[in-house]
Image 1: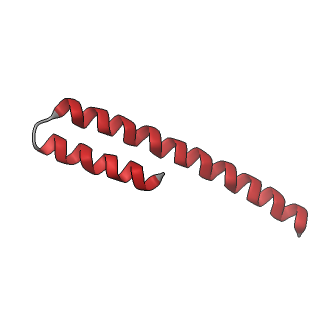
Image 2: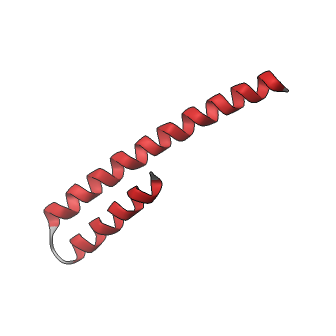
Image 3: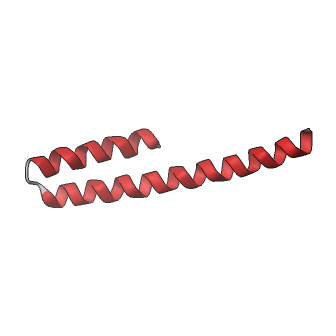
Length: 57
């Protein structure tokens, strides 16, 4: 998911460079959403991993 966020970020930069501001804003918005979803999934997995690690050890 981070890969897609980076791809949309690059699309946003290129579109902004060529003056397509609406496309740039849309791609940046999608990149932000994907980044925060990936961050939330990472934190959930981290919390469960630490919790299970404490149960096992």
